[in-house]
Image: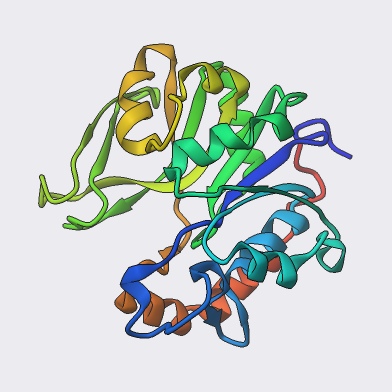
Amino acid sequence: MNSWHRVMKAVLLVGGAGTRLRPVLASGPKPLARVGDRPFLELVVRQLSNQGIRHLVFCTGYLAQEIEKEFGDGRTWEVTIEYSKEATPLGTAGALKLAEPLLRDEGDFLMMNGDSFLEIDFRQLIVSHRRCGGIGSMAVVQAKNDKRYGTVRFTSDGRIYGFTEKGGDTSSGFVNAGNYVFNRRIFEHLPDGPASLEIDVFPRILDHGLYASMQQGVFIDIGTPEDYQRAQLLFERLYEAAYRKPRPDAN
């Protein structure tokens, strides 16, 4: 196993209710929405497995039993899956804090949203994070006039210094693609109870070194009916990206 990931774990946030998808997804958890002929979340799991990330933590909530029934212990995908189940909605930061006991032996770990997919080389993100030496690194992609996400502001060396709120700026910019590498020091900055990484945590840890890693690949989330339909159209490309293995000479 290459030293760049060793036995690094990946945390997947899969607890959302997906209320905005109700017009096209009457029931079931959002990460299990079918894209092509398989659950969307399977593409994320396949992508991790094919790049050598095979120790996963699922942060579940809404209809958690359905996700656990679908994925079990992960052996079908050549991964191992542990579960951290929230009893009430905790938000992205709260869900991560709840999963801390499953990450106590981790120096660094990956984290991503289970309802989005980014065409990315995890090796590159991890190596970049370790080179910068900050508390966290965030994959970002360029978007045009998109009020939905807000933008990430960073220096030429990638250090993030601020964020633009959703809907606050109509110009093009880089948006948070929901893929991160964190050092376990992040847990020192997670508040108790429900909280959002994007709103409650990231703006407060900029002095600890939060870095942007620019990505060029396709990015899609299925949070709205429009983007869910777009995911259907992009299925073949998503499938190809999920099964792509890193180059043998990658270090």
